[in-house]
Amino acid sequence: MTSEVLVVGAGPVGLTAAHELARRGLRVRIVDAAPGPARTSRAVAVHPRTLETFDQMGVVEPVLEQGRRNRAFTMFARGRRLLRLDADYSSMPTRYPYTVIIEQTRTESALRAAVARLGVTVEWGVRLTALEQDRDGVGARLEHADGTVEEYRVPWLVGCDGGHSTVRGQLRLPLIGESSETWELADAPVTTDLPPDTIYWAHTGQQALMMVPYSREGHWRLLDTAPARPGADPRPAAVRFGEKLTAGLGREVRVGEPRWTSVFTFQQRMVPRMHDGRVLVAGDAAHVHSPASGQGMNTGVQEAYNLAWKLAMVARGQAGRELLSTYSEERVPIGRALLGSTRKATFLVQFKNTLAAVMLPVVLAAVRNAAPLRRAVQRKVLGGMSGLRIGYPESSLTTVTSAASGALPPGTRAAAATGAEPGHHALRAELRDVRWSLLVAAGGSPEARQVARAATAHAAWLSVRTVGGPRSSPGPLVDQGGRLLRTLGLAPGGWLLIRPDGYVAAGGESLTGTALDRALAPLGHTVPRPGPASVVSPAVPGTAATAVRAAGVRR
Image 1 (cartoon, helix red, strand yellow):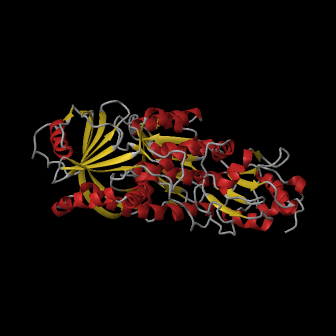
Image 2 (spheres, helix red, strand yellow):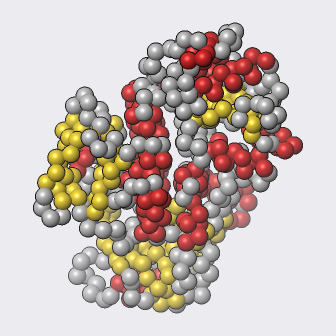
Image 3 (spheres, helix red, strand yellow):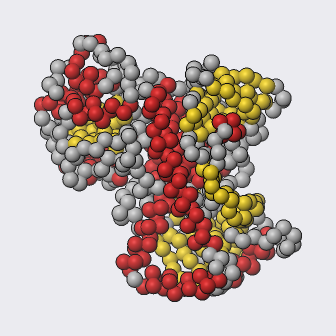
């Protein structure tokens, strides 16, 4: 075995998995059956939570530079403007209060460059045709473009090979759900007097279309929710799109020759589990659904990040194999909820019902004229699309504690503690660390300080930071004026334990060895407990309680 993980599929999900595994020190091999990078883009929206994840990965800047920031959704019907919904993230604090519109090809290019900086190169034209696994590893049959067949064995395999996943088929994981509608996509130059500062939805009276502005001036992603049957309308796609958009928007819209078009029938299906022995699946290999809310790539990236830190800890002996079971535990319910939300989004985007089309102006007029209702709708829509409200409060990795009122609740995003002060910048830098983070507010009891110092024995997988403390404190984290502590809701001695993916796992008003040991217990450490403090090594995993006892801290 020359690699520790074989990643199958080099789309955005596979590249995210490869990047995060390599960033954590694992040897990664990534293969893809395609002859080279994709030249067309299915996904075009990168939502706020994914931007936070890209920030943690260190790859957000090229995405921001090459994309267009969108903060609005505007609706037209039969030539009349009905409603503009502007982004309102006041109830979901984030450093990225917008969606970035960017071609998937550009997102993948940024991720490939990041993976290459870690020494991993995509192997194109290499197809997985079969796999077998046993207790110790996975045997993969790889067919190369020149016809040669390679029998390759690896400890772990991650399947990110899309909706027609070979990995999923080899595991005999069923896709549960239903078939759905046929839509048409096109990327084309568009001449219109509409400003490119919003996504547009337009209803002709019979069907709906969408226009999404790219960063390249005059170029748009177009979506037709009811394309003509093959042969029913022989006119070019540009003519058909232009005519329908003109009818819906009430102004002349000229569509140029599309760079590409695609007519496809999407499905709404998912697997019942995402982990089988030494094989894991993510992205479209685990669920396929409507593109109505732009969730596919974003969800896949979140999954890849979730599985990567867990798999890395298990592969490096820092956690027990049971940690991998939390991948399915946490992500399958999100996938199930996603099917429901995209089903609703699909219905709303299509709006095929004639009576509904007649009632639409009446309903949206009420939303437009009632400010509280409009704000509620904006937050509801954004909350579902942004990913910012996704959390893991019911996860077995989340410990319910007696945290102080106002503290970030366990299971929520630590990135919700956003701001422009030095302490907030320091927290963002901390979240880019590949390890767990233990944040302890300065000024606590002597026991809390001792526990924090003892926990530094696990520096290989746990970063211990004292917020607002003196330089002599463990891992001092600057917090001028205590602004970060107020945002985190921590009083002196309070603490938060943050997972490598940026979600709060536990917290409390006062750090004790018992509390920290309980919070870290789900990692399932199996390494024998060390003896005296002098033999505790940062590279040797153990429980927090072990380190506390070794340091002589009373329980």
